[in-house]
Length: 202
Image (cartoon, rainbow, N blue to C red; front, side, top):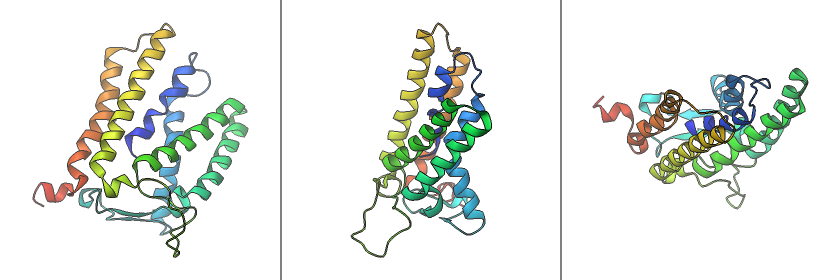
């Protein structure tokens, strides 16, 4: 999942009504910490994303090795480390729990929509459990449509929640949320089977 992860930041932001707990960018960063780790590991050769170029990639033909950033065992460790760090740095148990929840939500969303995950690395034994539906490879259009629905659902929930709290989310903000979160995901739909480069005849 890509943009769907960002939508989970709307949950703590909605309940941080006095805006004193943390700025919005902090919650956005927390939703994508596992992605930052994946990119870091890929840069040093610890994980792989093939093809590596955005314009050369299509979802169905993309292969990834996310052993250290996204497999189940490492995510448990990263969640504990990151939530503990947030709690100690900001001296807030609430913020530590939010960071933990956002990391868990990230992993659950990936299991729903993204690539297949393992306990810790792809096993040689085919009987070893595989986690997630792997929709990005098996049914990428379905995966992206689910992601669009998730984005719309979180935005609608956020707007309604803020209204119940006595705050109206401006039309400009709503348009921006839909344009960025939903619009970008819609933009990716042509890439389910073909790369952008091949679509434009490159």
